[in-house]
Amino acid sequence: MIPLNQNLSTLKRSAIRVYTNLAKEVPGCVMLTIGEPDFDTPEVIKAAAAASLAAGQTHYAPNQGTATLRKAVADYETGRGHTVTPEQVLVTVGATHALFTALLGILNPGEEVIVPTPGFGLYETIATIAGAKTVRLDVTKTGFQITKEALNAAISPKTKAIILNSPCNPTGVVLNAESMANVKAAVLGKPIFVISDNVYSQLSDGNCPDLSLDPELSDQLILCQSFSKPYAMTGWRIGYLTCPDYVMDRLLLLSAAEIAAVPTFVQEACVAALQTDPSPMRDTYAKRRAYITARLRGMGLSFPEPEGAFYVFVDIRQFGMDSAEFCTRMIREAAVAAVPGSCFGSEGYIRLSYCCSDADLETGMNRMEKFIKTL
Image (cartoon, rainbow, N blue to C red):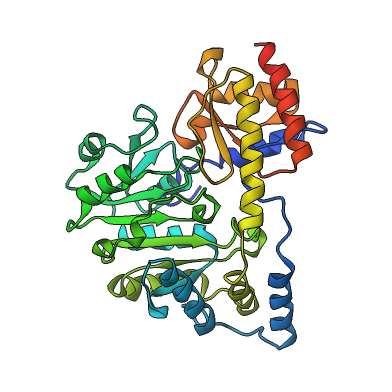
């Protein structure tokens, strides 16, 4: 057997997919696992892609993205207070590719990246592939916010970046102004990047502090964004990153080597997406959030208060089992699927996604309530 890249030896398949597949083995199981909007992509976006295809836009796009989309992104970001030029925009295959490009582009073997935990497991996967180390910043004991003391204790001479995801996957928690101020104070003027994973920023209640809007951090900040969540475009696989010019000079070369370019006609659809109002979907998620949180409280369960995205991170420590056992049993005994908190670095919790139909959500809560009563 020929040895492979040793950095891949510890990688594991996403537990989100593992438990989704396990749920598929149970007929009629309600899947509250994957964070995928149940809405169809808006017609205006699909029409833009169809028009682009009809116009023959089926050839290679520039490595960095079409001029039209990069300008549209720059206008959108600048309009919300994050001033960037089209030259500082890189079109990517979703936020996943944006994160891979950003982290592989800045991390050297042995360097460290700080991840507030619970957090999305992909961050640690990418850092591992890069030969870097993930430093988990446990926020479960600090109200799911970043304190100055905990952050300063996590920073070392090897720290290269901190990743911020707000609203957060898996908790739905929005990092408050104090958390953001603590991050800024800790990294400003130091050789430390802030990676702002903003994929849920348009799915918040509105009060969502954002360091990408702070011009003092512009030379240290890399923003990663996706069209998947706010515009129900998960299958389109497109996103973007923004970064300072000196960083783009290298990241563009890395991205070009990885993917060459994103399909041209898909980029035209994204120009239309940026002119589409996502508030109807956001309002629906807010109603579902109110429903699921009320139901969970009625079951005597606690959780950090979600203010965005479409997740609830439920504390199940009172039941005397780990999160993997809890999720496995709930699938097999109640036909409801959730994701173990251990997948996100925090044992004793489960993640429930409420981006499903109202009927499925009600059925799932009814079944979960019965299951809880048996424990």
